[in-house]
Image (tube, rainbow, N blue to C red; front, side, top):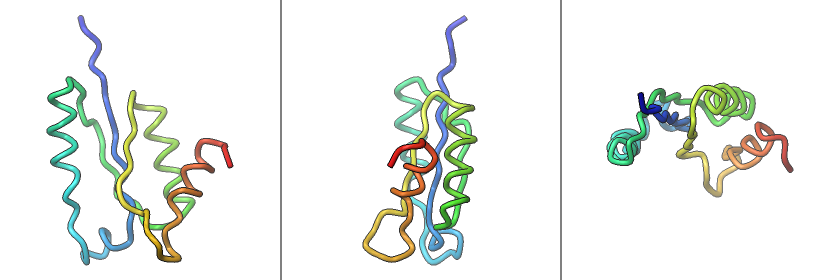
Length: 92
């Protein structure tokens, strides 16, 4: 039996959780992954809070073959994604 490759997505942003912005990436990523033979197994939406991002990244990268993130990158003070990913991976 062939291995089923899995992926997870962490959607980062207070604006998603508040409803100010609608996510437009989940369906597009799921469709693209399916074409590649990869199943999108889980999606988590987290706030712009380092501890929440680190926890989601660490949990999902252990449980899946691939991990993607969207959102949380911008010029505002609350965009802590880069530092959070570095902390989750133990670099920087």
